Every structure is written in C-alpha cells, then in structure tokens.
Length: 283
Image 1 (tube, helix red, strand yellow):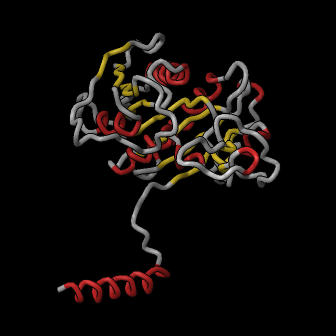
Image 2 (cartoon, helix red, strand yellow):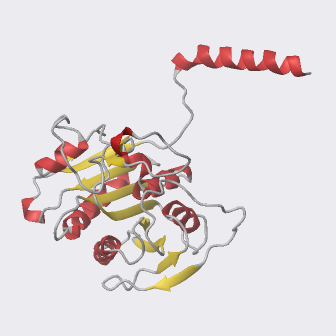
C-alpha cells in the first residue's frame, strides 16, 4: 500500500508528526512481498476549516513547495506546499512528486471532527478530494484537551490502515479518537454523524440595536470541533457521544456524487421541461 499523508493544521503540527512516525514504524514492519511506501505532502501553514477548497488555481497555476524532514520518520519524503489540504492531496496524487498513492491519510487533527463539522473540515476535505481521483481515504482526529494523546490516535489509525487492503475502492473513513492514553481507550465503535455543528447561531447586536452599514455579528460556536462540548442530546451510537464515553468513533463517508434517487425523477423532468419552455420564448 502506498500512502499520501496530509493534514489541515500544517507541516509543523504535532499531529502529522505523530502520524508520520506511526506510518514509518508500520513500513519498517512490512512483511516480505508486500509494498509499503509513504510520502508527506501537507500545507505549509494552518488551513483548518478549508473543507475541499483548492484556491484560485487559474490565476495562480503554480504551487510553491519546500522539502522538510520529520524526526522519527526521516525515511518518508516530506514536502510542505503553499496550498490547502485538498490541493495538497491533488498535487500529491496526480504526479507532482512521482508517487502514485492508494490511500490519502489525513491528520492527526487537533480536535474532533464530528457531526456537521465533517462538511467544513480540511482534514476530511482532503480525503473527499482523493475519492474524486479514485483513492480511498482515512481522516484522523483526536479530541482536544490538556496533553493531547496524539499517540493513541496514531496507534489506532495504523490499525485501521491495515483494513484498507480488503476495502472497496474509494472507501472513506472518518476516525475520531478520545483524548485518552491507549490503555484507557474502551475500544472502537462505528459512529453515526450527529447533528452537532460548528456554528449554532449568529447572534443579534447587544441590546437589540438595529444593523448598521457595517459591524460584527457574534457567533455562537457549537460543540463539534475542536471542543467536544455537551453531547447529552446525542444517541449513544453518534460520533460525539462515543467520544465522550471513551470510545473511538469510525464513520464511513461518501463524497459528492450524482443523486440517482428515483424519487427525484419527476422533479427533474418537470424542471427540465419548464426550463425548455422558458428558453423557447427567448428564441
């Protein structure tokens, strides 16, 4: 298996260092006859919350890079790009570094990516982008807190990687690990995406003052990331609740694709007919 490692916290983040170190040890344990290789292609600075954005590649059709070395993973070629994680995944996957990956490994993110935050997460955005190129992906995040146990998340991630050998193509998994020492982790469960959101609401101005021509609207931040927050309204098998209970949560994701639900057929037919009639009036 050939792995492209990236993240959204940047090349100097502790999470990607631990992830690369775990992958390096996994490579060192490679059985005879099996291929295990990796490369790190990650943003040069923090790009959290970028989802699958690639930036304006039409006005800026080049990407600056710089070679780095990760201590403890010196054998893995490492590059920092002036690019968001999704573009790092693309450049690393389509020949920018003469490396053809089977799997995009993204993380370890500093803070859980549960609930609706998966839509906005650059960690998850990198693997969703890889799926559009035919690649499988694993996004790895660890619950925020004091003395974050990236080591626990890294160890679990390597165990999950082993399973990709028998997975269908474009398999996408979102792994969230509680901030616990490995010996206190209760296990790994399949988690459902909860309704927790990054932003719960946008507040009104103090005192209910009317909106002027410019100003600032206060945001009420939710419990999805990086702090887990209150999960008392979640079911026991939802991703946030699993983390709070001491379990790692593993969720299968699906990237953007055509919606072929037969229930939409009548709507699509009506919409296309209406558009055609409107266009006829313009001729």
